[in-house]
Length: 176
Ligand code: S3P
Image (tube, rainbow, N blue to C red; front, side, top):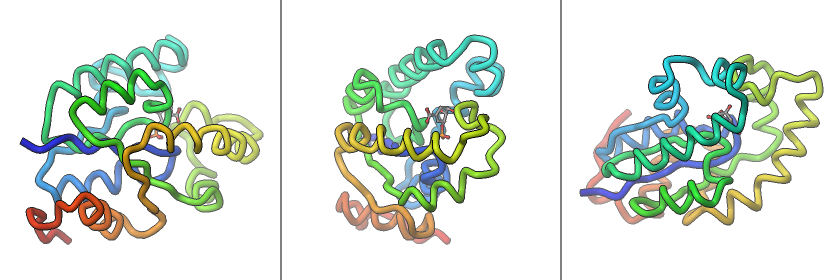
């Protein structure tokens, strides 16, 4: 039974993309927490924010953290805000390691500039908002993380780097 690997970090840092690679390489199942919540609720994250508000969504993240921490053999791509609540980080850590994917702000700005799906970013001052939120969140992500991974490289490279850092390379498979 393998411990869960929980990917955290700012919106656009590659949690889902790297998560897919990491799951394939390490023989775990990928769960994208946003998609998990969307399926549970039968609506998109945008709709959840519009209908119920952010606080309700944050509560759903805690419920999802509890449900997923009961399983093992998972790579969990968390949402960009999930582990900022220390309660969620504690729950997820019960059965796994929290890995922070660090990508420089400039790269995140580039990746996020045309996003239409993330409710927090649908505002005219997006660039300034991202810069401020990034500064605020970075220390909190670092506090929650068991391991900090430089993640600017392509997904498969970062996934291999993670397994090396965790000393799990022996049981990893070759996947392109
Ligand atoms: C959020 C990030 C999103 C999603 C929601 C809130 C955040 O996930 O959970 O829009 O607070 O940073 P991604 O990081 O996968 O975009």
